[in-house]
Amino acid sequence: MLLTLSIRDIVLIDQLELNWTAGLSTLTGETGAGKSILLDALGLAIGARGDASMVRHGVDQGSVTAIFSLHERDDIVSLLEENGIPAGDELILRRIQHKDGRSRAFINDTPTSVGLLAQIGDAMVEIHGQSENQALIAPATQLSLLDAFGGLSPQVQKVTQAFQQWRTDADAWQAYQERQQAGNEEIAFLQASVSELTALDPKPGEVDELAAARALQKNIGRLTVDMTEALNSLAGDGGAELGLSRAVGLIEKLAPMAEGALDESLAGLQRAEVELNEARRLLDDVAAHMDADPLALERLEDRLFALKDLARKHRVEPDGLPSLLADMRERLNALDDDPAIGKKLHAACEKSQAQLDDAAAELTAARHTAALGLAEAVNGELLSLKLDGATFRVAVEAAEQIGPQGRDKIRFVAQTNPGTPEGPISKIASGGELARFMLALKVVLAPSDHSHTLIFDEVDAGVGGAVAEAVGARLSRVAQKHQVLVVTHSPQVAARGDQQWRVFKDQQNSGATRTQVDVLDLGARREEIARMLSGAEITDEARAAADRLLAIS
Image (tube, rainbow, N blue to C red):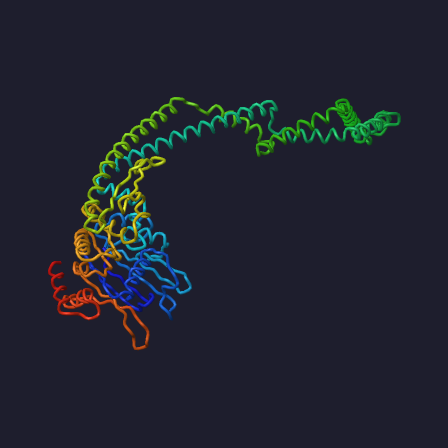
């Protein structure tokens, strides 16, 4: 329920605070007094599109604050908590509109998006007027209205639960199939990779060894020439080996005559002779094993490059290929394709699909029954609302796909005149007719509908007398279950209000014109209703008629 509406610097309003009550509040005043400004201001607070032209001339910004009671609105409390906004007993919606077109939104003094403000505002307030009847136009709202009328909440909940279970099972089955597809692809990849690695058979440290052997092969020609020359220097005629052997022979002959003086020299020459022979033997061995095969370098390079290419392919270092092969073999062996799991998931999906189909079919049948009842009840209200000749029907049609609310889409269709084709109510009915259709719906749905603040903007447009009285009586009935505000030019409707406000323009001392609102006591209401009855000059007969209307109310 709306408790307070505070307006600052919006159009012709500089400062205004209105305290609302439960029941039916009527808003009256001369045409052009500014009643629409109040509705536009409230719309701004609940998330309607902002406009720089709404800011009062001469100021930088305007603001509107709407305070609601959250009694029995657990849905709004949950929505606030989901969005990290503190929730209490009251809901404060605030909008600041700047003259440059920018606007800012706040919920419980927490900055928020205009989208969230509008979502919560739409849940708190329904506006039905000459230009907009969202509740009649929106298919989702039409569906909820039908379900509320038919008391179909248990069936809807059953479908929602079945849909959620089917969605869970279907997601699990799809995920299994995707895993299987991915698994098959991974198996093929692993098998090809293992085969390739196994064929190459990489060894730890092999790349370094191959690199060294490749470098040796590249230098083998130069090595062979130089080693041959070195061996000739050691062992050929005049070589070091022959010279050293002769030196050792001579010293051995002289040593006995030197009384030990040549013993160390002899020993050193003998050691040198041994080392020289060993060095020559080693050189002979290296030379004997030196492979001068021209194809050896090609073979070394082919393998070295093959190892490096495969390492790049798998994005590892060449020395990591043996461990990669072992890991791939382990992964290949670990892949488990258990068909029993797939059969179980598929069976669960089919079972939940069948349960969803049954629940949705049951809900569809119930909606067809409720649609007939709702149409009959609304058509029973139309004649009294001067919609004689008009008919209302609820079309229950199959949606393209099933959802948590079933597989139905709902359309409110109407025929406003006999012999004319029926069509969507939003396209067939005029603005005033739409508002009265909505009033008829609200009368029928009042016992089962959610608690909203309902605003009817000139729902009585173009009617008077007994029809206006019928409109007022029905607004009063709806106000027993909802907080209702009606903007009206009808004295019969105004008299039905539990509270009445008069909107008027006031000329300030500065010469500026301001929109003001007075809360009327019984005497002031009598005068205002008499004015509405008689025009500019209020007569005693008009006052007497006003007394009769107020007495009826």
